[in-house]
Length: 124
Image (cartoon, rainbow, N blue to C red; front, top):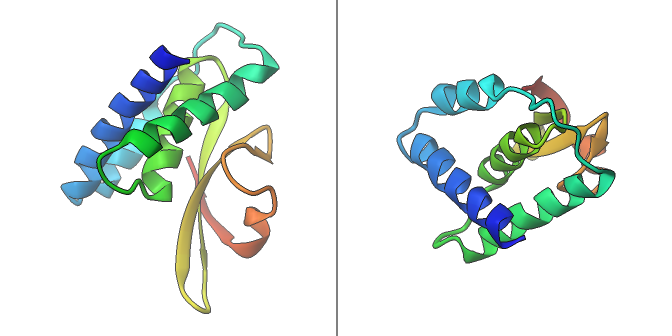
């Protein structure tokens, strides 16, 4: 778990670099290009990876927004052979945006009903 949390922490730093620089499109491309590793992971791996990202987020030196956390989780899941999708959604009134991760249509790093609150803008 320690090494997984360290990898998640490094991904948070990398993604933060793009977001602080105002380069959403570059961050988006980076996440989109992460290829699915061929090795198959156990069903418990998804939960362990999401937990590692949560742990890394707690130790991160500043607050980690949902986009940064979800992008890191998506990359890490794909690198472990899990077909994850970064989902970006928004709601109109009041305007809010949110990001989460889905694996086989199931939300894995947020509340299971979050997709009912936001209209999906994009899947990466």
